[in-house]
Length: 349
Ligand code: SAH
Ligand code: SF4
Image (cartoon, rainbow, N blue to C red; front, side):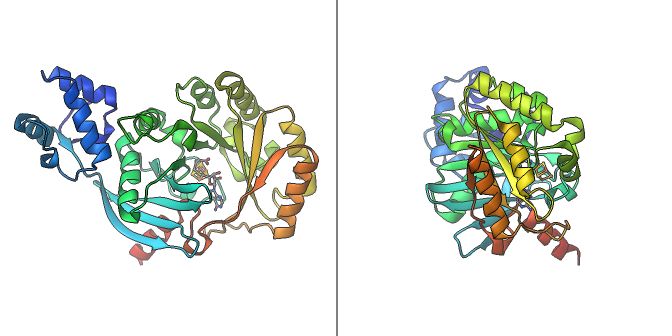
């Protein structure tokens, strides 16, 4: 672990912080206190940690940063969806989305600046990855967004800009800290990680100790359609992704969500639905059908409502567990990456 100057304190897991405190000759309970100040009281500066001796406060001040994100702007949609744009310390912009679900508030976090997977339908995929976010920068999105919205967040989805399994170490630390009882204490079953299908990481993730949900972006039942949408499919084709899902279900003993965006004339026919049902046969998955959010960066159109319903009905008929997600935040470009890319364009005019 790099303990260099100005490391972000939110990057330390509970164990890292305990080790650090012990290595400096202090008692372990000091780490507990620091965690409480960070995650319960959400202090904005180290000197607010009033039950710590001055020497610890001075030490923390000289070695760590506390505020990783600067709030830039917010957009609120009529359906309650809130989008926040933040600036990182090196100037990069990221976005976080807060959604009002019927079961509670859910936050969608960004894991990378841009994304190298380059899916042809996705606004973030058009912006090459500049860098990974650290675990602390991902955690800070939750804390800052709660502060701005003045709402308690109950659910976390790792579905913002970036491919979380291309930033696996930081993702794991992030998950451990937000789940930790002395951290944000968000239940593992309230957390979902979405991947474009990085096969070796799906298998590794099957052995991750927390019962976090997994969602896989499939979007097509065969290699021809999937490769046209996601070039990662050349590296990890549909068959291998499904095998990795099977492996995950066996080892993690958890159901997997299959994400499937419906794009007009591309992947939304009854034949495609039938093919999808046959490929998913025997797998403990449920399919989440998502209306495509049109973006200026891509030529695709959203499937008409009747087509979506037909697709849904076909899966149902073949006994696939399926839901048709209602669109959300459509009027403020809620699909991942869009607020940021619109803002960057406005800035560059
Ligand atoms: N990189 C990961 C997680 C971030 S994307 C992944 O691809 O799974 C989260 C989800 O949003 C993915 O299922 C992705 O396919 C979907 N998505 C991206 N652009 C979209 C758009 N314009 N409309 C609807 N869904 C979109
Ligand atoms: Fe990256 Fe996911 Fe967008 Fe694909 S859909 S470009 S993997 S963020």
